[in-house]
Amino acid sequence: MNKSDCQKNANRDGSKDRWEFYKDKKGEHRWRSFATNGRQVGRASEGYKAKKDCEHNAATNGWPGK
Image (tube, rainbow, N blue to C red; front, top):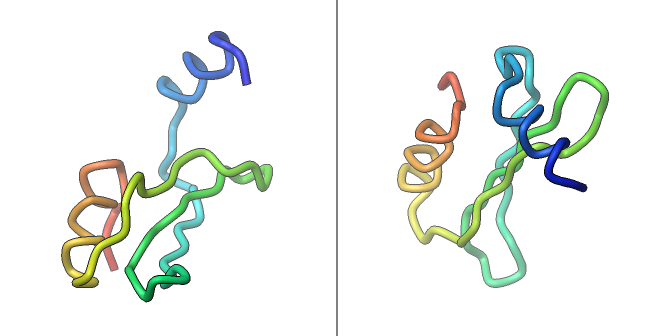
């Protein structure tokens, strides 16, 4: 990924992204998002013990909610 890709990602419409929530190997909650072309465009930078904290972090990064 280069600087141009990062700028395009920051400015794109993410309303059709697919969001995935999962538990990592430590049992902590994480999220990741994928563009319509299947490329991963976002992810949690840390694990969360509580699912609601993970969902809050995802919401601050564009997750539209349930």
